[in-house]
Length: 247
Image (cartoon, rainbow, N blue to C red):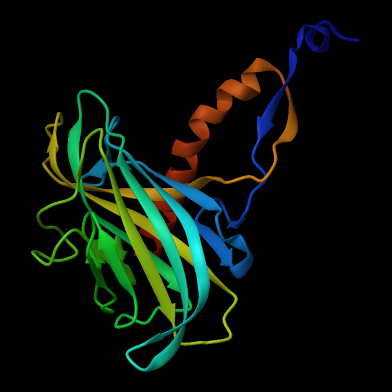
């Protein structure tokens, strides 16, 4: 046994069994009707004027509460109901307000039959939804109130706080048993602590999901464990590069 191998620390931790299907580099999440009472979490970085800002961040935890057929306004839909906990995790010296949450779905949702209540109360699915700061078009935009638009407005979640809302996504296909989330983004406003500007955006990556039982994971070397902290930033840089190429 070499000296390097002999010096390696071996330890066991508990890691979640993923309840959902995480795709790509964490850039989309597959949901199915068997995922009721399970959750997934999306972590967001932050940038202003297309420049990364350390300390500007947020997270969103999506818990699937129900899945089934509902009759809405005389029509039947497949409805996936989520509880969403949106947390502003910005840290000193940065303070901010999260005012918008956007994403794509496949297939598309029905705007009239879909709804959101709680901290966020408005849902938009206009084809021309466009987040600023180089993000581009999104299919779904959630806002705290009817003022402003998807590029910005009043209300939202302040630094250190969590806003909770109930999100019902309705689909015209009544036999639907799965769909995908992708392209998660946040809109930050009222930013303090940087000279770059007062508003920005965040790119989201799916970083964790719920578990029914822990699964042991053996990690070789403390260096590997310490390296996980930089993975989030690296993956988000990849997503930004993809968006720039598409643009």
